[in-house]
Length: 353
Image (cartoon, rainbow, N blue to C red; front, side):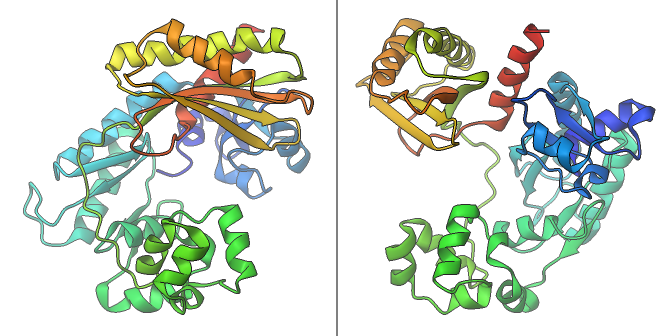
């Protein structure tokens, strides 16, 4: 979807249309959750500190999020996807992979299906969507970001090699800011540069992700579209109004995070054995500490006690900006859900007003 949260707010409030808008909390410790395309022209984007966003765009409109509305719209969009195929793999509230090789309407053209879906989304929920069409997930994901908003981009098999070679390395799946900087140090700036490296060399420099980089540089991605994805972790975190350097102030925040995590675990019958504490310091340095149990963590007392013990291992002298607590199922490293953490952050902010 195109600027999903912000577009919904503009759809539902005519006064916001055509104006730079950010979904988030405008306070001194706030963070932008989503930005309209009008705001993006000023350099405002998601995860940007609210005070920085206001410096870039002084007339920026801030709106508190309405996650219940976003989730409702998301369900409508997913229902449209399922009209065409059962092979729908959601990535977030507003993004999914679809395998339409065989589809319910027996349409031979994936491009035609994408056009129909885009049209139905606009008719049903009043929003625009961008689509990427290709023969694997890696290429389809990249293609979906082209020609936004309301775009449709197709990468055909005969064009895939040349398309990937011209890509900036930042466009590759799994290449974030830190990895991109490391690649630049190795003179890897495009897909063509990446393709010059052996698989062994990439693994030596980037670990297991090197296997994926090697394949992607050759336009290869053998991952199937999975209609069911087991959740690997659940987490909760909160950014504080002021930096904290004592355990007494952090313990109530740890308790809140534990309550949120256990609520989800109980509601969804989630099974995970590893408790992880996440700390972000005032200088934005992030550390984690973990403890693994022989059996799944299912009660508040266990996760809270583990959190307390892990917190004792943390140096508080740099002062703490953010605290998070999570449980994972030990199959993959813990991932922090933007939806969860934003919901909790805004819930805390709203309770103070």
